[in-house]
Length: 115
Image (cartoon, rainbow, N blue to C red; front, side, top):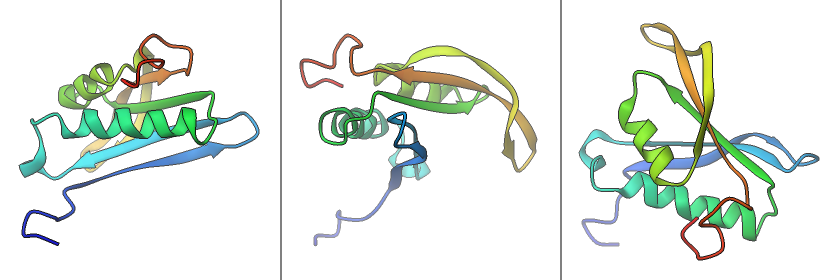
């Protein structure tokens, strides 16, 4: 391991429903790792794995409506906005409305490895 090989964030799945082949994708980065496209790249790679290797049929993610950077990550990674979920996310400063984004394996861009 080199000095640069350190964890700077997390990506994972929650709310996994194997019967319906649906899962929620989650991610975060440390502040010093933000702004370089790393989150969107990780989301695209995880999305590809979920569709091609794990067989999921729908992935979704949500973020606070106040988190413009996370919205940019979602749309850059090809997750279409589906709407606003009201008072659905608990943060330190209280409940936040959230944006819901989703992706299907049939969405444009999934066949060229850019998922």
